[in-house]
Length: 275
Image (cartoon, rainbow, N blue to C red; front, side, top):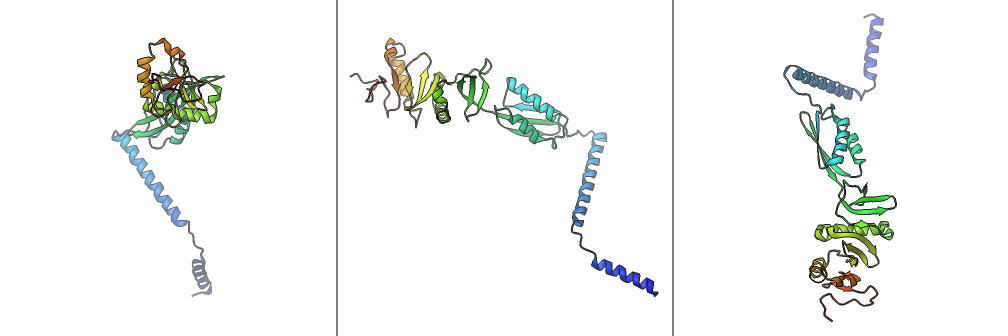
């Protein structure tokens, strides 16, 4: 064998033995396979849509539940702009989520894909619990402490209002939210009759429609003694002009509903006590 040929063969053998490893090569092969599979799938889908009548998986309709009125119109507009015409399984769901959660009344929502062309949104609204009267207006306050819309003719609700500025500190508002939540869940009829809630050193204070006397509620259990109070009030005070002379009702005492003078040092006598 000529020396030149022999040298070339030795050089090829040496270069093949000393060639550095290429760890990226398997990943390239995997990528090529994925591209081929995706291309084949896309081609099959195109053929099926063109010749077999298969529907495209694009969003043609957005159905929304969980809200109504102006809120429904607003959410429908946002969802249509972001979703209609987009692939059902590839649209930007996070952008839709961010856009809707910018609305303070949206507590959360679920996205459901209903092939071939329907997207469903199930919304959960924050529930107004109190009215919050401030110098800038009257606002709805949700049960999780979020300030919602201004009160207007479309969102008037039979819920208590917090007017007293001293009752609008963070600590007092948290306590009143807890009080209102307990009353709404356990004594809804009483809750819906409350015109105003305040927070005092004694605890929560309720004012009912048509009655000037404050009602002192328990800090630990705001619903305590309310059924007894309602029964006694309807029996003795509802149609009795004497109720105007009662300066307050106190429901904080165990087993007693009392009425008396705000200046009394000792607990007043029970409403059922004749002496």
